[in-house]
Image (cartoon, rainbow, N blue to C red; front, top):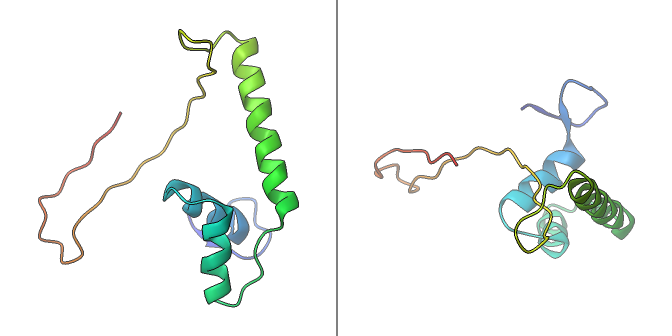
Amino acid sequence: MPVWSGKDPEKMDVNAAAVSGTISSGGGHAQLEEVFSAMDVPVLSRTALEEIQTADLEEARLAKEKGEVDSDGIPTITDVAEGCWSKTNYTALSGVICT
C-alpha cells in the first residue's frame, strides 16, 4: 500500500504506516521514538498509544461477545498480514509462508 503524508483516504498516511511498520517488526513505542529521533521527526504522542491500546481492548471485547475465544477464554482476533524475508545479498532460496 502506498504511503502518503497527506490526507488521501485511498492511501495509508505516514503515521499509520510508521505504527504498522513498528508493530510488524516486533517493536513498540520506545523503538518508534528511537527511529523517529534519529530522523529528527516528532513521534506519536502517548495519547495516540493509549488510543491504540483502547482499540485493542475493544477488539478483545467484541471477540469475546462473538464467542471467538480459545479454550482458555482468551479472545482470538483475526489478523491478516503478508511478508517475506531474504538475506541481504539475496542468495537465499526464495519462499513465502502463509498461515
